[in-house]
Length: 405
Image (cartoon, rainbow, N blue to C red; front, side, top):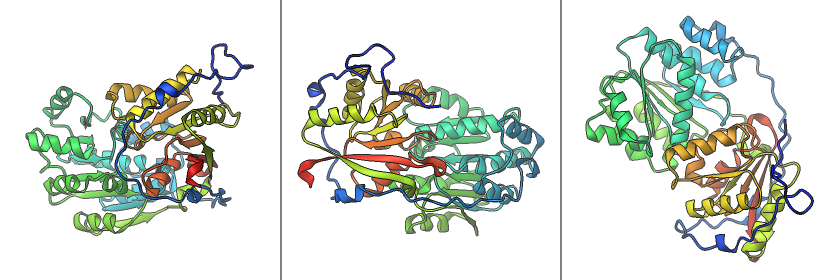
């Protein structure tokens, strides 16, 4: 089902969203340091026609040797045929093997580790599991998936993320939770406070290892992993396997089995182009016209700073768009509400900063718009990878001042 960006209330100009001036929103909000010099020509690339290779799974979810409660919960969620990463990872995890999973985003990685982890916790009452993710939003998505798959198992848990009050986290930790999910920074905070002890945790999952390393969490990750029980089962999931990721895995994993189901670079299925503009007013006008296009049904718009993201969101709302913003300046509750509204199609435009967007997993984003040029080309690739999920064609448009050409 498609959704329109046009305002739900009457608007001027033959039904299009009204144009509000942008001048008061165009003040400089401060940079984030030096940017990598990127040739704008790299933002122009036609999408490849990727021939889907049919994968024939060896199992159904009902075949996995896991507790019947877990099977019933999977069936209730409509899980019948596993994705390649699930099909190959779950049996290894159930057998107690260390696993390294290399897979594109949106391939079902969460269930691939949640099923064996929850089953191990049910089989061995003394076991405890730690799951780390790079962002609050991703940690919350993992917690929601684990809660659904583990419904009725009586396994207790705690979620430890920044931007959330300490009180509920301290309360949950006092109950000796069997599974702890969180971000490296907040997990380390609890270790330093003495409110979290990891010596009896013998299962660990690191999701999006490459992004955690990119975000500068290497020292926190090493500190946390060093506190875990010596005999443990480890799951490492990453979209890439560079030397930094490999070194971390070699240090902390025990003869892991690598499962690679990556089908190519995420950006290959994305039509990429630039939008030339001259001056702030022209930039917002071009964005206005773009978001009014009939083929744009759900758009993620990137701005460099949290102040700029908030101002741009307000400007779009003033023009009649159903928009919201997600950035580090908002409370965790406000970020959750904005993301939920975006997922539920209550809004069709979400303005975000790079850090806040790193946990966004929304399957039906048609367009990624770089209103500001990313700091590095790697950031660009991660941004645009949120369109064109699951083999679908996506679109990425980057705003470039004419003076750059």
